[in-house]
Image 1: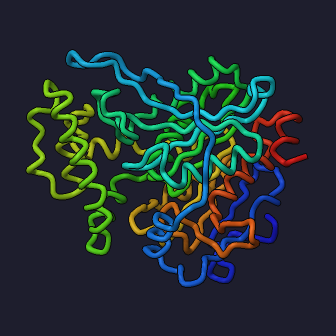
Image 2 (image 1 turned 60 degrees about the vertical axis):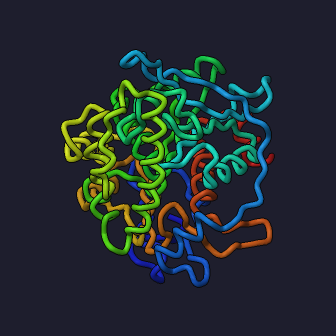
Image 3 (image 1 turned 180 degrees about the horizontal axis):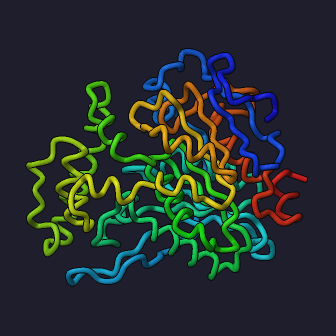
Length: 374
């Protein structure tokens, strides 16, 4: 695979497995070399989140998609997507990338914006999807978002394919968003839509039980409190907007992510308890059954995402999955030294776009020329 084997190489790439069923060329894959001074997962994660980007996007076209009917006298629930379409005469024939953010992110998260700019420059369509209530959309959804809302991916997929007559769609998710897209791809694996050409998961939250426990470790408490502050504030807003559902939410019992999942997600998401939620929604159960070209990018030094050995084995044994595992990279960061003045060193973003375009994932000859700048 372009000289990158499955073993350790200079302490950089641990695994870059090309499963037997994948025969595409791997010229899109370069070895990940972490940026100087960023060989620590926490530093990678923080730098990836806070380093400024010089990115501007054209004005998007908003799209509201109904994902659930009325609940307790409120509703229905909608998700808001921001769509960037190529000109009408070529739109349906160009690959469309649906980007899904992570926990407490939005369609404006830096990695979503960065991927959007890259994809638009390649002549692709891009749909930036907000999960329920995210991106300032509390008023659009009385129901909460969580890691099991994979059906929302399907409804967005159906809506854009139907309205734009799309021929090729790829799903790209980060962290929790990766769990959603992988879960939905697994749910439809027996008969995937013909327009679904590829799926990508970056730092995927596939094993929720162990990852939730890792988030509560002393060295990760700052991340946990960062998420909790935002999530508790969201529930407070919902107590005002939808008192008939959330007026008696027990926020006083929440001191950890597991507490939140126990008293909020499980209660208002229809699960017996936090453990039932973690097991029920984990996309790892579909790791062996994915049937479209899939790219998984994961760093061993991710501070709080844990992947169980059986999940890793299932991914590596699936002929439809390309599994890339690096020693460094943190959570959703993967900051490498810029290779040129025109490179920002965002290795995962460049790699996933290379996988989607050079892999020919659903691109027509016209779309492939546009993607390669021909």
